[in-house]
Image (cartoon, rainbow, N blue to C red):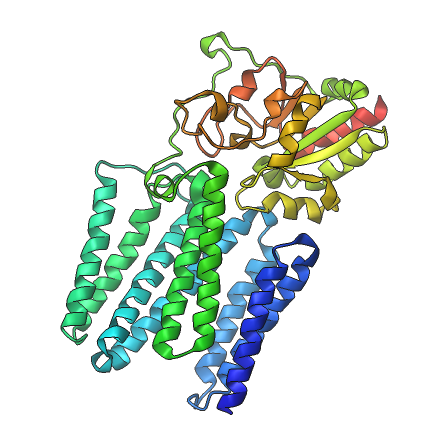
Length: 458
């Protein structure tokens, strides 16, 4: 039976690796999803075959509770809430790792060797800080708590002190042989506190990167637990989760021209400027959708820039309808995709695929930027920070150096937005005041609907 279990574990690990491979491309992403699901089903089945399990009652109860929570999350949460759902999933996974580690300590803590005790304590530390950090990230993304950085004097010193003190207690516990339940409980509390202190000063715009970093922590926690339980599949799955989360975090930081330390400790996202149309004599031009529709009569090339505003308004299907209307008039339409548009990498790709927008129309930032000068109209649908020219022109801006979509180089910009409010990074967008920019104020779905009707009637 043990040989069968190990064989199934190998098959499960292979499916996890194939899942990551296939999900790296749109054409094979469905296969990747199914492979990951099948791998997890096999892993659970093989674990249930272990002879150490004498009763399935509590396992069945756990499965029912988990399915009762997970199924509504998957079925009912909208695509705009994918980052929140991801944060919750990380929170639950990290909590499970932390609880299992705590159970191992209270059952076998006094009999663990020094290396085992070190692994257990690090696993518990990572698990519980990821749990509270992920919950806080969920709260910020859902706007249950303020999305702006919550800053206070000496915050980095406080956070670092809590972390170092927890490491000191872990070292003391290991040296003393592990037979100090009260001390272990204090380490758990410090881990929970550190997760809160880590995420609290980070702005909502950086939450996707934070979620990815926390994903890496959760994976490492699971991998450490695999070493402790001598479970090879848990080691492999945790390592895959941790490494993929780390790689994604690096890619996101690169896309924003930011470092890990700047994301985690920079406090980016404070409201630095309040948008005011009359500020410094700057003028904002706006039109109704019907008036703006006339501009498309002379257009030959149009680029659509989707952002979180499109996602929040559920406007992707109307964007596809507008694309069809324009193409019927022999207007070339492309979509400019920024690596961190929306709230997670690939967010816009998934939404547009849901609306049946052909994937070959989606052009990445490096390829689309040289095309903007010859573009007649750029239609920005709720994207803010990723189109802000201050990232190129203003050394004093927190966005300076961040690669952006060069929409300001197009011949005409139509910017759909509810108001003149700042983006998620809390920074005013210089593009609003460009002579080439016309604002179309209102809900993205409603504005786009009116555009479609008006263009059809012209």
